[in-house]
Length: 146
Image (spheres, rainbow, N blue to C red):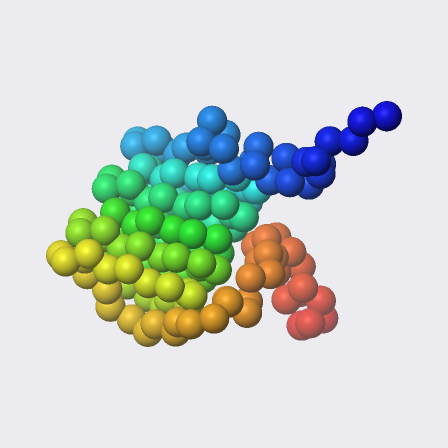
């Protein structure tokens, strides 16, 4: 009889990106592999691989990532080496050390941050498709060589 003004999709998006639904990799944890999430994620440990999130990625001051990142927004305080694609805002904090390629709509760099690499900005990131897992890439490579 009564219809809610919130559509299910809007409430689901708000729920996924709420601060209560934060994924966290703590200091002392090391992950080798791919991470995919619909929510926000904070990395204070070490990750070697691909991270794909539809939310915000935070690399804490003790965080170290080597690989590829695809996300909506990102704040970097720690170390990153690789390629990062951010659909909206990439923020490099004063303690950030980034080596690699950046593709983003907007970039904010605090004094003291260190960036070495190429940067492409403006407009929406075109390559926001979800990257294939390493297993899928290996299977495809095997098919091509066979």
